[in-house]
Length: 332
Ligand SMILES: NC(=O)c1ccc[n+]([C@@H]2O[C@H](COP(=O)([O-])OP(=O)(O)OC[C@H]3O[C@@H](n4cnc5c(N)ncnc54)[C@H](OP(=O)(O)O)[C@@H]3O)[C@@H](O)[C@H]2O)c1
Image 1 (tube, rainbow, N blue to C red):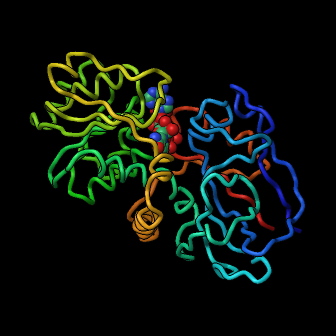
Image 2 (cartoon, rainbow, N blue to C red; image 1 turned 180 degrees about the horizontal axis):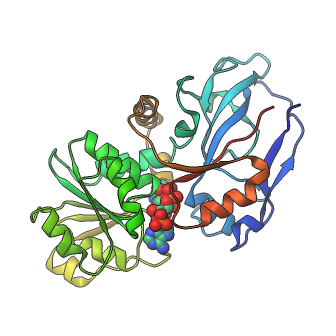
Image 3 (cartoon, rainbow, N blue to C red; image 1 turned 90 degrees about the horizontal axis):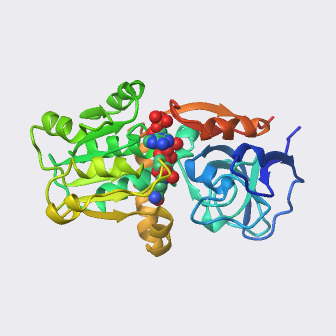
């Protein structure tokens, strides 16, 4: 018998797993233009955790279903509705509440994906791969052979950035905060992996033989931004896209004034808001092709059923993971 479950929250709290719970719901009646989709996989990203704690940049009205991205398989189309065929694997629309056994979605917003590809890898397509691609492509005119430095390099975004940089002929210096994360980043194709610390710029200079690094990619903030900026060549850019440390980015006047370093920010949600749909679809199609071909992937630490949503959120909120936490609803 099919169990219809969704991971819902009715309030926000600093303790994210305390507010989320799996609740049953009735099979919905479809309207024209809608599809019923069985969710195959949906990740828990840091932004999902911050949405539960109330600290993210956009917060849905309550009650809400958790999960911003994922993939599913079409189960039923609404009356008089043309769309992806029943059985087709599809990318779910962003922000639909993907931690559920099933979702109702407008067919116009479903993007067909290769049926044979790994649904757990495809489930991470909407957020982190485009972020990594745009961080590499939108700020500095990089040429093959140029160096890029990033921190939190073992994160999902960091993992994609390593692989995309290599495919574009770029070299990467990857900063992690613990020795145990080094080997995993190396296996993805990193040129250099270093553990963060006070003498970072000197160590980066030594391993790159004094190369002038043009782009620094920062998701940590605080003093980590300062250490990253010190690794860059004169006139370079640091792009911040996260606040994993919880602290404001620190950049000294020494970097800004004497070395002409610029600090910018990037938010994918804003890019989706201001970018023509055709350009968005082209980027997602390119990245989906790479994922389906096994050329782009991110490590997954563990999968959880919806009934284990509290444990899953707790695991996602914890540090020192070996990869993403993935919700994989059971469909009996
Ligand atoms: N701006 C945007 O559009 C955008 C898009 C996507 C993601 N993001 C942001 O990018 C960041 C990474 O997301 P993700 O999904 O790739 O992450 P993820 O795969 O869940 O990995 C989390 C990473 O954060 C590191 N970390 C956690 N706390 C830290 C701290 N206090 N100091 C330094 N590192 C810390 C972890 O290191 P350990 O393994 O050592 O714990 C790990 O590398 C998040 O802040 C997310 O919100 C932003």
